[in-house]
Length: 143
Image 1 (spheres, rainbow, N blue to C red):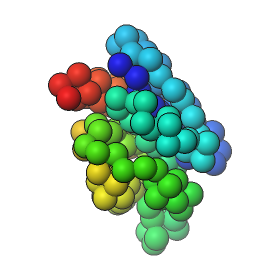
Image 2: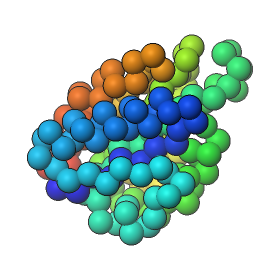
Image 3: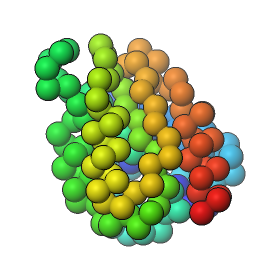
Image 4: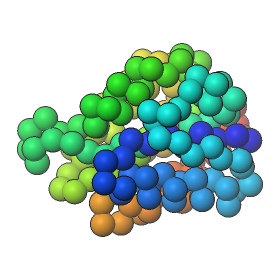
């Protein structure tokens, strides 16, 4: 199975979370393509059996909190996902608030089947990566 792990990272925390997800997917015997979302191509998406997509949380603690604008723009550039299993994750400093729901809705609008979500604090970006990878891989194998 081929899994694409794409991420939008500003300070490196989300990149570390993406690396943890990629390592957990590899540990389950799958091949992984790990890329910044801005560098992800339609071909990367098309050759993948499943996708994990992550972002950092931007906003002003209580106001306008959500996925990084660059992550939402990256999702818009993706081709139609045709029911492909997708996991979403984010890293946050204070609170993820509606970040995962917004990201999930954006991907579902592209035809994704969102099967797992995880929010991890910036101080522990790898928290939850193994469970996210487990759920994503199990869903991809069922497809």
